[in-house]
Amino acid sequence: MGNKKRRNHPVSLSQAGQDEHLRASPHGTGAQSSNSLAYFEHLSYESPLPPPQVLAQYNVVSPGLADRIVEWTQTQTAHRMRLEDAVVFGDVRRANWGLVLGFAVAIAFWGESFWLVIHRAIYAGAAFGGAPLATLAGCFVYGTRVRSKERILKSAQMVHSARGGRQRG
Image (tube, rainbow, N blue to C red; front, side, top):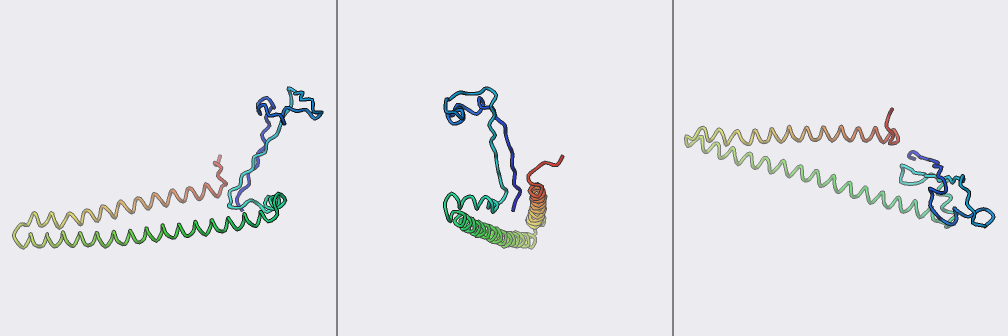
């Protein structure tokens, strides 16, 4: 399970608003004390499911609700995994097509370069032959840098998440 965060926040009743249930005295007179405090509790969980104790409380509210919540979470997790699989498959397919089409363009330029050199246009042939080589090298370097930055960012996010979302200090 993920980290559970619990915070108690003391709030004076004058700050809490003018709700009747906060202003009413235990005697039902509606009298208001100026030094009363109310405590609000904030719970948050970094997990798809709340802890078992909280799930049990859901069953008190509505029998079987915890089972429906677990089933819903399993369905959502399976759905998310299918979406991630589709994205990864699409990325791989797109990358493979990029390689194939890049190779085809490079072959076309090198063919034109060969034709120009045979017909004594040596400088133009060299330009047509060198351009795809420089472009492919540039794409390789750019892609390597982008992937490296993505890995560093992902690593930092994982470390941040493992610390419970807290800054180290």
